[in-house]
Image (tube, rainbow over all chains, first blue to last red; front, side):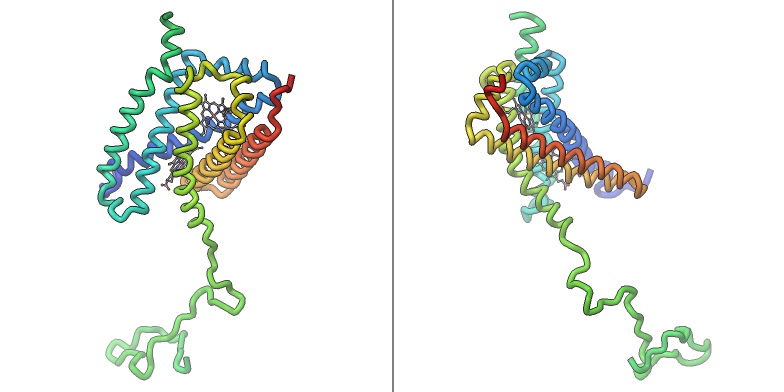
Length: 126
Length: 160
Ligand code: HEM
Ligand code: HEM
């Protein structure tokens, strides 16, 4: 293992890895998403059939994952911007990362019912 | 540059004086790539700086556009359950949401495409691999932007 640096293996590195992974995932989702939306130019039936898969419980779980990726990438992206443009940004990067993680957790808990509620009703009846 | 002697070895005789003195300063070394009258002021464009800035500016705008979009599609008014052709027809009847979706499409695709360009530059080391991956990336990005734009502008609620 190479010698440690201030950066390697610390919060800064892991938040960068997570930012990169979420960014790439969102890009691939967006590619598929524009294709599925394009079905409105084929026929209402074609669009509605494909959108029906978005409403199944398994895909609902994927949507929850997508929300997780977007929220982390967005909040951490704002942190990166603050580190670059705010004079005290670099000094507070660690505090800002924990703020990002805390906000992300709160929002993810808040998203459980709206995003997964319909799937739970379908699985367990209501 | 009269005293320039680029062929002399810099090491003087062991016991003697140095080749160089106040009157005979060290030789001038020509810069490997000399500027001529034809060289532009800056030999490298500012593309990377522009890309860096664009990532940050588009990022700020995307926070509003994408999180707003997710709220509308997944949270408000019944979440995903309400989505269907009729719902899209209702939304794209308004120029406001057309412009919203158009801006989101262009910004997110260019931001994500440029981000992926960085990722390819980081991991693909063979020139050929880079060329092919970037070719694929640019093709997919341009295709997606054009298709999405076309769909917004040609949407027809009475298609059937
Ligand atoms: C699972 C979550 C999502 C759902 C259910 C969803 C749903 C929809 C729907 C119904 C439309 C049709 C137009 C409208 O109503 O505005 C649409 C369009 C669009 N969405 Fe999403 N969306 C989701 C996530 C995203 C994300 C994360 C992004 C951006 C990264 C995004 C970007 C777009 C774009 C660019 C369009 C316009 C497509 C076009 O020009 O053809 N969506 N989305
Ligand atoms: C929601 C608002 C968003 C914000 C605030 C944001 C912010 C940022 C920032 C500041 C960077 C530059 C990071 C750096 O230079 O170190 C970045 C990189 C990136 N973003 Fe976003 N972004 C957002 C949405 C998106 C979307 C929708 C996509 C996908 C379509 C995306 C994909 C990427 C990718 C692939 C990278 C490159 C990652 C890397 O080089 O490690 N981002 N983002």
